[in-house]
Image 1 (cartoon, rainbow, N blue to C red):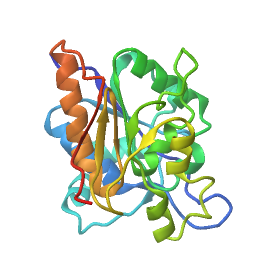
Image 2 (image 1 turned 180 degrees about the horizontal axis):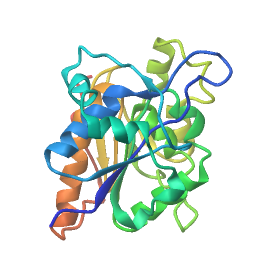
Image 3 (image 1 turned 90 degrees about the vertical axis):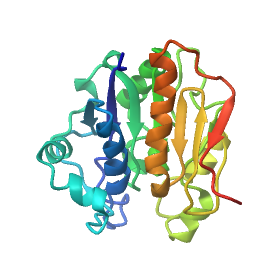
Image 4 (image 1 turned 180 degrees about the vertical axis):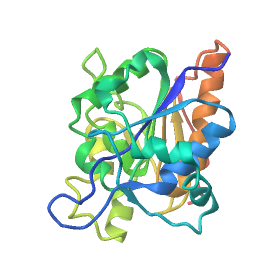
Length: 244
């Protein structure tokens, strides 16, 4: 029996704070995950903090998966007409997926509605997932126990080294790797810009855009456990780590 729907969360932020630099949701982190889930006939809804059309970054049309979905009317309608968090209910979704892009650093962390949705899905035996800067949506999520969702979990996100390499370490409100570690997560990584995905129970996270396809596949592997009524392994399990 196919699990409940998948909820994509995309940033509404079009600028890097007050710097004037444009940003948005990183396109391949949307399309590459969407492509994998759609291939297996999962239903996908899309929300953003402000709703409506989301700004896009990294719009590279020489990427065949980007080109395919940017010419798909249904996909375009979803990202041009995103719902707001309060318009959906966590009980309807088996997965929440936070796509990245630097904009996520500005409007994901303090959004209480997103935090509530994430905790609800996780505590309803659902999967919480993110890639790259999408993990900014996880840093302030607390469970009903009061504990941070990421505490004690092995996680991946855009690293401090990667942020420094792209020259954005002073443009973002905080360093994502450091913040996750402050919340009690065990941050892991591969060499900068290499694919890296971590499955830690029902929390599945990826390091950077190159990790997106494998992140989606890892989410579906966890869903297989859930759909078959098997317990998802509680120990941290890591796959697709690039050689150190």
